Image 1 (tube, rainbow, N blue to C red):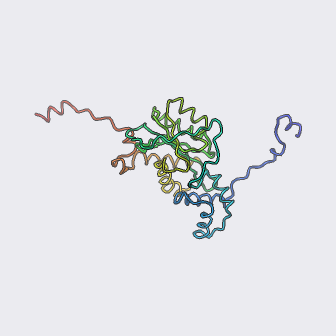
Image 2 (cartoon, rainbow, N blue to C red):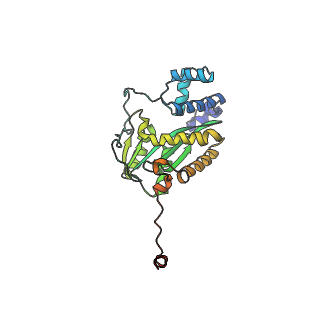
Length: 276
């Protein structure tokens, strides 16, 4: 066995390795952290530990909270100095939406990733939204938070609409600064815009989307598998796009505003009868 592993370049210890799933306590705590983050994204681990002790009677070590939040891809929003420089191929682009009047569909698209708690683990959801109409154009679910997840959502949006935006806005996450992501947008002739560091308000519409989706679908149903989660998100997104009116959109649905119905042609015979 040792000789075979040596020829294959595989460590023998890996053959005996048995993957261990996430413990139930960590899964429950991650869900609670996600709910608290939606309520107040500015809590650091010190205040978070105090809130957990006061409101939930939980004595949680700060190092454990830091580890779980890293796994969730969650970071407290606060002002801090820029202490690191992106690696080559991870260029940070300027924010192009400041003082920009966004007046039509496909002028600006945006994208973001959110953590999705599940009873036995977790998943990640990426969505692409049209800024002007709030219409969700494409989304994807995965148990890993990588660039492939974001590209799947992007390609679904492009395939569904047959269009690309003038500007695409994201945060400065590693998925959106990766060469694969930026190269795809550049090849389409799309201008790339990125939020300021820690500036969640720069992409506020998709943050509101996450809040509604989690409280109205994910927290209520607790999907047991990724497949069930995809079905639940599909159902909720369809209702959000095509059924729910938005006051900010003149009580139209996002889909109505993004792709308005073709005007009905008048029947000339009917008009002449009415005139008579």
